[in-house]
Image 1 (cartoon, rainbow, N blue to C red):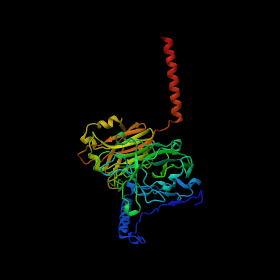
Image 2: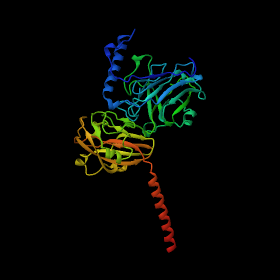
Image 3: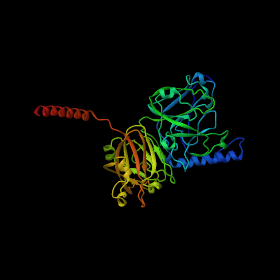
Image 4: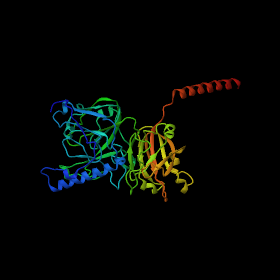
Length: 427
């Protein structure tokens, strides 16, 4: 293959799957059934729309080009809007990306919990892992500033070029390794691969992230022949959340939707409920529109208020909004202690809950707010025994002070300084 040759692949925009027309030449019946199973699952998940929604945003990764040191390996492929559970990891292997979690272990997020479902990603060549760490392997071009995620085999020594680019591992609970991981589902053919998060995970990768500017960026090799190569996923810049993992068990895992909150947004991973927000509220709570938000599980509303339900990692200081069903006060006289500990106070605004997705408001929720810095935070349950809905969570950037506010702050400080001097002279 020639050096610097660019290959860009795209996933289909339509999720219609014609199982009758699915043809597999020279395949065994076992292989046919396996592919049909995966196609059916993909079609079902796609019907859930907001649960694993793909973005209509224009491509962020516009190209991935092999560099001279990687010219003898399979070409990289850019897959637009194609990342998710069971996504093909490499151009020269059957390996797939998956969340490492199962229904019994949720300290690490699924790929939906990482907020990366439907994002652009690069399929590298696994054999290109042999490219030396001081040699360029790929040049990846971004159409705009982006939050880029990088998966590095946990058996691999962290290369210095990765940290030089600004990448940092995403922290998680110290009780489970301290950092987020995703999994490699490895197989010699498609019949040896599992379906979904946490199934047939052979090896794992650390999750790194950084913000990169629009333009071309060079990724070097790893200089190793045995471990798996890395993966690259990109989403829009401005996102604040590293990911969300479920701590408790017995309910569907949450999903992170990046920069997507608005009226009509699906509230839960296991319901068709939608948040209904007035223009006045969106204008008053700066940054709420287009914020990162969590689709929690409505079935989890009965989880203990004294035990962890979700673990959320923030990459930057954030204004955090908690949407709390007004019927909460029919059971409790005040906020749960974990809400107080996190500093939530009433914003005096509310939003509606459309429980049928038909445009009507069936319930309302109060909006509480707090400010949290970068770090890992535990959110407990509501412990409700009634029929109220579970809470929702959104995250927005801390608004920059306007020029007028800065001028007023400066004048106030000057006034106080002069007053202190006057008081000193009087004493």
